[in-house]
Image (cartoon, rainbow, N blue to C red; front, side, top):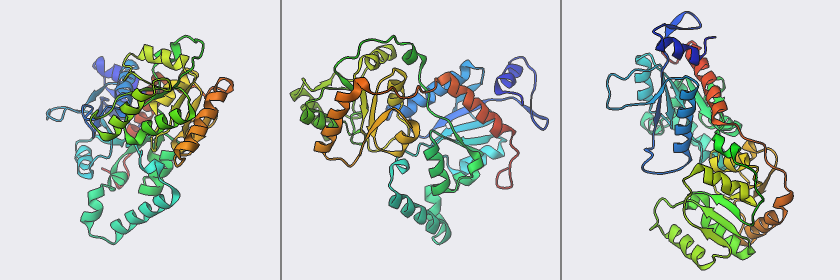
Amino acid sequence: MSSLRDLARMKRNGLPGMLPGGTLASVKVLFNCCLPFSLAHGGQAIQILQTMNALQKIGVEVEPVRWWDPHQAGDLIHYHGRMAPDQIRFAHQKGMKVILGELLTGAGSQNLLQRKARRAFRWIAENMAPAAVAGAFQWESYRLADGFTVLTAWEKFLMEYKYDAPSSRIHVVSNGVEEVFFESPPVPRGKWLVCTATITERKRVLELAQAAVMAQTPVWIIGKAYSESSPYAREFFRLASANPQWIRFEGAVDDRAVLAGVYRAARGFVLLSTMESQSLSALEAAACGCPLLLSQLPWAQSSFPAGVRFCPVSASTRDTAAFLKSFYQDAPQLPCPPAPPTWGKIAMEFQRVYETVLSTKADSGNP
């Protein structure tokens, strides 16, 4: 099979690329996202930008969707979110295939009863309610899309179980980590545990700080709030200011090399969020050989099958403090988690996914 790199090279040289079956192809992948980066900073923006950059480095032609440009062309749209069914149909009419890369952050953190209830609700809405009810949730996108990318095997199961997405179209591609985190030199571990997260309820940064004060365990919080005026952020700032011996907070660290050095010198990494898809900061810390304490959620157990300690999300402040103190004491003797992949390796995995989707003949459900 011709690779996307070969096809892109052929295109730059003015030569046609050939997919299996004799189809001429001028391969271009268009990226789109349902959430503007300016509205909410976080891992999804890093994931998309790093993926695009890594794909370009291996020769794959990729660019953002220009919604204002009626002349933009492409062969495949990689949509980060749940693309509306009508938009997928429009893409198919233009001869473009569509891959959905939706983050199942909330769905991935539900318990068994919640998952069953929502699956039953979808079945009832699609089979017994007026079409407009099911249409509002855009579940049809899971039948129309030509492929799906998910971060973990857990999300693959959810996409099949909750939305009836065809298993053969779902591709598991993990997040990657920048080379700078692998290249940072080892240094002696210091006294601070580190948590890199947005100051918001979902990340439970305030609860972590409260547990740290109770356990008298030093934790360095790195990040910023979506809104510094929110009651949650203000309470965290107040607690950190009142307990500098246990809570270190100086805002975000934007320099990636500096952040890598922080992970190298940390006693351990802590993230006790209520829901995640796959934490980039946890992967970055793992690349720096940092012991991990994570919430006991399926994403973490799927991403780190070994070398990690877990804390129940439902734990009280007192119980969380006990987990935190135990982790702090044991961290120097704990094994390092497995090294995550680089973005370069992830780009090659996406390349193979694109090749598979572009070379697969459409079934009767898709044009």
